[in-house]
Length: 82
Image 1 (cartoon, rainbow, N blue to C red):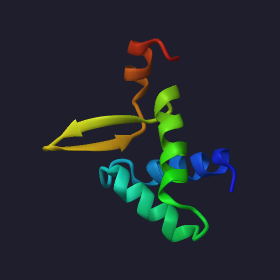
Image 2: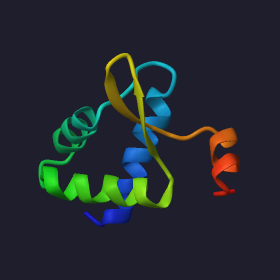
Image 3: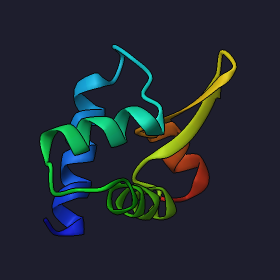
């Protein structure tokens, strides 16, 4: 599976869960590896890190735990990404 395909699936999963549950990195690893037996943690981690580096997703912190989420438009405008 190509890294781009993995990133698309991660993004779709984050969109689906937005507003329902804050996902931790571990939740994303488990979901992707359950759906695709050929994937390992490092492959998923590399794809997720690439998404974070370009600003497609971001880490957030709240309630004593960090999570991964899709940034809001206001945040992207503030950072000059759009």
